[in-house]
Length: 217
Picture 1 (cartoon, rainbow, N blue to C red):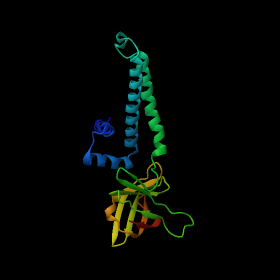
Picture 2: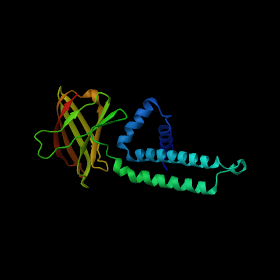
Picture 3: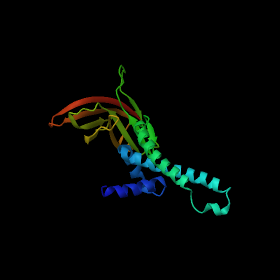
Picture 4: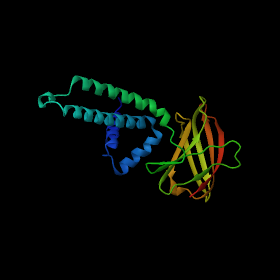
């Protein structure tokens, strides 16, 4: 176990129980978008706590109808059931994660807007992105086909009013998505272009795709 794992576990517990607040909570929620392991840990912790509460409530309701002397300690069957549930909850959370790693397109979650930008075959123009006024930050996602020859990707964004942003050293997630995050205030309405390049393992850089899109506020 690395030195950072205990601290991460503490933050997961504090987040699930509502004790992580303020800027620390915002940074933690932003990290959920780029760290599948962290999101899986949050789901597992939530499932465990919810399951134990349900089991405790059920056991309490059963004990309430028994004589007082029979309530000395939890039964062995209850402890076995709780352990079984805990193991099952972890397996369930880990199995559900691949189905939930891609959030629905153009979704606002934890004050962050997530927008998937991809070319539509046969479309006369590029995708249209409407920025939500309720989200101070936005995550743009671009689908790519993972290749064993590609060491990393870079994205160059250009737009109106000399808008230019460069993102290097990007890696696709398990769904084949490249994600970049920035303040929504950086975007003005207008036409944008994303130039995606690949960096091969031998150091060769080549253009992967150009994607034009319109942004509205």
